[in-house]
Image (cartoon, rainbow, N blue to C red; front, side, top):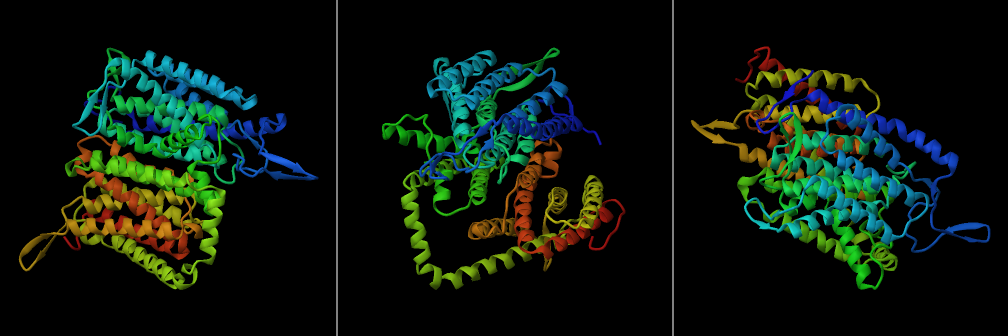
Length: 600
């Protein structure tokens, strides 16, 4: 079904179908090209070789080496990402005003390709990065002239500082993504989370969907297509060609967000318009905080130690997680989760402006800085001492029973809280809007189809759970939650909000306490599903206010993660959740469309 997205500040009228096509085209082309790149890399033996030494007939990994992998790995996955992105933009976005950005990113891709084939010096790479960044900032005329600290407080910057700051942001993003690419799926996954949250933040501030259409959607599609082959155990790396190109695009997205610039129409031509209000600096940084601050802290430590800040080592945050005993996939999952939480904290002051939450990003940056500072003190020797303490610690015997009791309590508490939220639909949904009734019918059909499949936790079933959750929570929240007791009307909205806060806290504790047990496993598919609730924030007025979609999006996110943790642990819970979703969706359809009246 094709629908028109129309907004008073939106100069380009785009159908929902075209938005979807830009994303899907990039995803499919990247997904299809990577196997070709793999065969090409194998035939020409274009590998990223591990750091090894030979002892007799045995090849051993060098202690302290930077690389984690132990087998030669194809390293040109960036080719698939770039081609997927470019084909999508050429097919659907031929009138893009960002062609200079595409061209500059191709320059960075080529430099990275040369670096993959024959390593270039760090000074030469930095020189090219600065030159390309100056080219882009000058061509787009995008200096950051106002640095917003909160919505009302900002610092005016003169042009001789605004232009260098924009260049610095782009160069910083390129190096941050490049240095983050140390574990399977890490750079791609963290970038996907960052781009997704930064795009939502940018739209909430500027109301400009055009930049997301021309930059974010094709980038997200190419990242998702690449992550299919790059998640642990990876079959290909993105290489410097991919990380340089990706950092370039993210850097441009950042300066658009921080400057508040938008894409608008002047006559028949799309142009870049200067913004009146940019994304608050700390909120924007939090969307990509881990790669940015981790790189900054590591470089600062290298400078203090008298080393070159551009020479790679094993002092990054992901190395620390490996040192303290987390596996490869657990380390990536922990960083994914932390990146997402930080991004959500950055969104909070914008999503809930009435609550004056400007201090939240400051606290988040402070806590992350403390964590990164502590992680820099942990090396392989310190980690070994920590692990020995854990193995011999009295905690392992004395408090093991308490630990197991806490986990069991959280499992039971979460399970029945999820069931309670799903069961409450008939009691509080009232008479939902007719559009929710038709949406519920579509959701019910999807639930029935998904329930037929034998394999649980596949892509389609995750998609259906996310859609069904969003529809049911919208139906519940459509009417005011009041109860009449002894002739008086009481608002129970606060009780409903408290339930979701409890669910969020208990699910977070459960995931953290069971991280090593793999009760909750995050995949790229999950992050696509997590993105769906945030798509609700892009729906224009008056639907945004009428259906309270900003609240629904965050509740849907909490609810989906809780359901994922629940169904991962209890296989039978998946069928129960699907059954209860079907009952709730069917009830909403019957009440809103068919006129069924039971409680109202």
